[in-house]
Length: 200
Image (cartoon, rainbow, N blue to C red; front, side):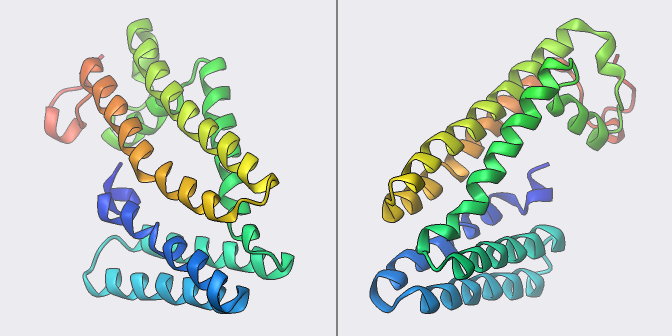
């Protein structure tokens, strides 16, 4: 799952456009900041392609920065750069929460798809509880990102918004991954290709 997101390096790379956007906006203005963020995102994309890293997260990261830059340009405000990420966190938090309420926790669905076990885990209440816990952790992560960053957005604290974007980015993602790994190991659902047998 982590590899599909570009690994830990991909999580760190995702912070670089933000790191250049805010200070350049303060010094040279919004237009320079937008082009600088796009330039950094483009350089990261080229580097990852050169290193033959997974293509999907590299392209997704570049497109994400492009959307953020476009919103900031249309709004004419630097804080618009963070609007897409704020509402993306809200959507993710809602999706993960609804999946728990529907008794189809998303962590179980995603992991079952990736490891080849499908949805057989739903026949075991213990496994559902484990995946509920892991899914709830992602709800907390995305929910916290939305609440904190939307508050900073509404009060025009662009600098602190950038700080929150980075501080609540890969560090919290690492925590959520740790809980997910714990749940998967307790469930005993190793990838089918490695475990050799289906686990019920």
